[in-house]
Amino acid sequence: MLSYIIILGIIEGITEFLPISSTGHLILAEHLLNIPNTEFLKSFDIIIQLGAILAVLFIYWKKAWNNRNLIGKLLTAFLPTAIIGLTIYKVIKKFFLGNSTVVLASLLIGGLMIILFEKWYKAKKFESTKLTTLENISYWQAIKIGLFQSVAVIPGVSRSAATILGGLWIGVERKAIVDFSFMLAIPTMAAATGLDLLKSGFAFTNTEWMYLFVGFVISFITAWMAVKFLLGYITKHDFTAFGWYRILIAIIGYIIL
Image (cartoon, rainbow, N blue to C red; front, top):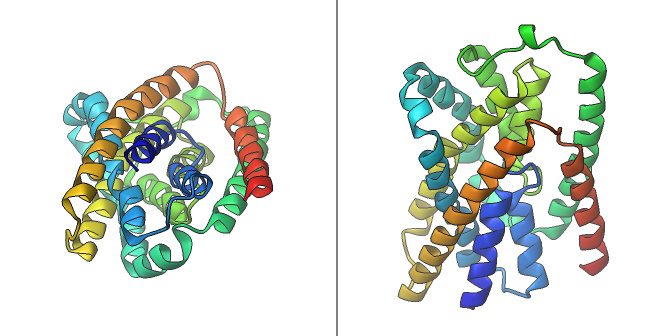
């Protein structure tokens, strides 16, 4: 089982901040590895995101600390997801988490939307002088970004894809919305983890706590690498390749599962 936990930790860290859905990849991997879909596994998928959060804190703490106003906007953007998450938490965990059909459909539809969006975005030819920078994101724009993020309560949608494409659509420059999306992950995933721990009553065995710790450490290391990769990637590329990747994974997943 420990070898499976290591694999899942690597998958979580690599995919959390790429627009390809970490939860979707975890669910598919668990099906392929024939890991029983227990309540602990559902909690594991949520809680190991803390490792990815820590990676973002390491990278962005100075930028957030030097721009205190940004923290208020991040919390504002988090509100829609918090409200929706609290409202339908039981539905999400009971019917969505572990559901490979929902994941495959979300990966496929999301991939097509990324490809079509990037074609539309290029055709619009936004002027860089008119795009919103990270420092100039308004509270109203933050709420809109938060609404886009809330769609990602559906496994397979991808939180980063929803927030990044949503931000681009409302006129935020690409580098700025990627930074904002990464930092928005901190309150979002911290709240999701805290909620799950409260709901589960911290009722894990010593072995399960060890699995959580291993997954946490591995997801931190791989998430740090993934964030660094994407920050470099977006300087020269758009997200079309990720759209095709999602479609490919959805097709392969459908054939196998």
